[in-house]
View 1 (cartoon, rainbow, N blue to C red):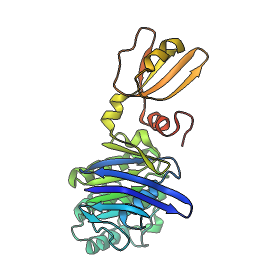
View 2: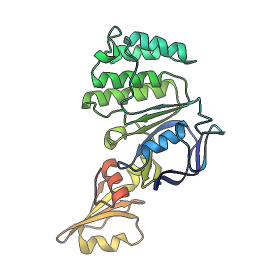
View 3: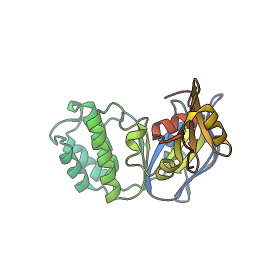
View 4: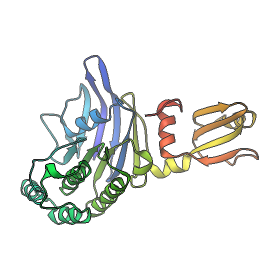
Length: 282
């Protein structure tokens, strides 16, 4: 469905995307992760055909993507995207007229469920409601690929939960590829199926969330007890406090010996260790 073949994008002397090769063959909800400046937005703009790659080829459903060949079946929604200052109901009507196959019934159902006043003009909505409306309109069209760049930025915890419910409703009604860029990893992990982690313009990891949940864990205990266990394991980060070590692992689970604890590594902590070896945060 989506393929990046050795794709590079430069801005002057800066390489934003560095020889990425990636295949997304199936429908699903994907989470795109990376530190600020890692190349997430550039990745999305390349896929949407908004900008041109310096090298390599991007295809969607076998058709090459570029600014001169923008894919009709990809819908990219930037963070903070705005709408015309029309009433909510008029915006939905306009979207239905402009987009073939627009699911007007789904859009109206979702605006009612999330208590968006159909009579209120766009500029009179709260920031969170503006974001929700823009997302509803994006998810109501019939495109095969939806790209959402930081869609939950500025939303409170309740609205983020509503956003996740909206994603699942939309995917259930119209299975396709939905790629979401976000920093709120633990929350989106509840609804996403796969993770794509970009670090320094390269794909550091592409894996199913179930695989990460199974293979990402922490071993903690004395340094002398932990060090022998790391031989042959993929240790993605570790820390030492006095004589106690915590080693973060992404590998098959082991049965730890007595005196060594094995604990689940959260998606957020897994991401931190993958991109920074446990030495940084976002």
